[in-house]
Amino acid sequence: MSQISIRQREYRDRADFAPQWPAFLRRVYLARGVEQNEALSLGLSQLLSPGQLLGMEAAVDLLLETLDTGRSILVVGDFDADGATSCALMLRALTAMGFPSVDYLVPNRFDFGYGLTPEIVEVAAAREPGLIITVDNGISSIQGVLAARDYGIRVLVTDHHLPGEQLPDADAIVNPNQPGCAFPEKSLAGVGVAFYLMLALRARLRQRGAFSEAQPEPNLASLLDLVALGTVADVVPLEYNNRILVNEGLRRIRRGRCSPGLLALLDVAGRDHSRVVASDLGFAAGPRLNAAGRLEDISLGIECLLTDDPDAAARMAAELDSINRQRRNIEQEMGEQADVSLSLMQEKLQDGLPAGLCLHDAQWHQGVIGILASRLKERFHRPVIIFADAGSDARGHPQLKGSARSIPGFHIRDALALVESRHPGLLPRFGGHAMAAGMSLAAEDFPRFQALFESVVEDDIGDVVGQQRIHTDGALTSSELSLETAELLREHGPWGQGFPEPAFEGVFEPVSQRLVAGKHLKLVLSMPGGGELVDAIAFNVDTAHWPDDSARRLRLVYRPDRNEFRGRVSLQLIVEHLESCLD
Image 1 (cartoon, rainbow, N blue to C red):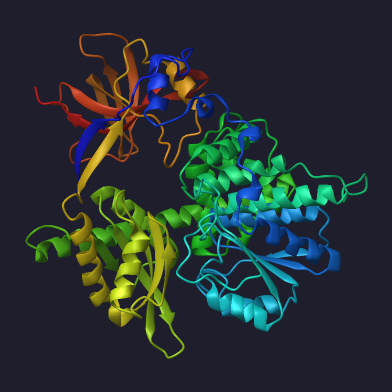
Image 2 (cartoon, rainbow, N blue to C red; image 1 turned 45 degrees about the vertical axis):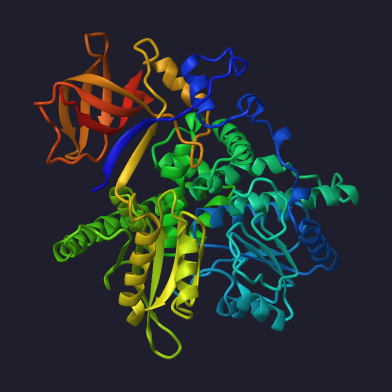
């Protein structure tokens, strides 16, 4: 387990910054380095211009040529929530702008793997598209783009992942992370890149006078629910531009002005769309979309987002919810198996677990390894790679697929690139970004790769692994510890990756402690020295240590939240960390 220290976020107070706000809210924003305009304006007028994206003009030219010649378009997506929302957005927008034939194709992860591979191009060619548009993939599809050219199919790559040393020879590429792109915020999700392309296309069509009573100009803001969902679910940093996109999407969802599929996904998850926040997209709607891509076929999720029939959306959302329950069961079983592997590893090693964890089990499910890697990364606070069997290559050699998750300060994709540069051919395919990556590996090479990965992590951050810092926004006074504070914090998001939801620290006296559902700790607390009582809940506690009736004072890291039960609304603290105070 990781060693935990609690630190308050540093900030420099500024008297001119939002003086009308309460002190705790000003402190929260200043600690995140927010400028005045970013705090007070999250309107669409503040969005960065599409013209700042390298390759945008060529991409729009390509789309217009395809429209003028009447050729069909095939959108090739990815099998996660970002890919699904990108795909749905592209189909909805292109159809609304008069493109006569637009369809999609998403590779099944088990048969084709990730991205525009030569194998998926062969499937696509049977549909005879004039143009393939990749969404949320393509920047590493060197061979796939060449295969499309051999078929005479033009390719437009839209992606947000980091490129390798070589770019694909596509007809146009739009990716804020490609070399030479001046777009100032590099954290757009795949769906954000797709949205920007559609903005630029609409502007050019408007210049051409393409819109009329017969072909009305579409309101692309109606697609911001999809942009918000894909952005939050893909856990990209919520820089200012992304916060605008997510904020506007949330505003539309709260008014019910969004796709019936998204409303249905929130409904099956028990979330009230009128009060939706970013975390509801990340922990309720997103996982239900992702589950289809992990276990079966993401096409069900895409169809759910494409339908305008509420009844059809409800049926598909219910099916996605069922698949997600299956995913949770598989994840739990894999987690138990991982615990056994880690226990055996600790028995063999004298100095505890290695700096980087690299595990493989023949029984593990390819679609769930990323979740397991995330869980172990959080638990042990060190980079983790989980491998699953992936069949055999063309020569009959068994292959593995891996999913990696990292901690701040260790760039996981760069680490993989370092291993590959030192041992060419060891990783036939890999890609990703600082905090997450995917790769393929020959099964026979697993022991060698495991040792190399552990060594790279040890050399880079070996002295800090297992030492987790929890950052807080300080303490709340007894008067600030209120339902009003919880409501203010909900209203002043969106919060997420790179713009963390506020968490506060404090010492409380436990009045009562009890387990609910066998694993969640329900607490009633009071401030030291007395005061009003407040409810709190800590999810998934270590039941070997909690409840602890001997604890007289508890140090908590918590988030104030709104709790509604049987029509009664009250303050509840969501406990992220708790420990007994040593008197």
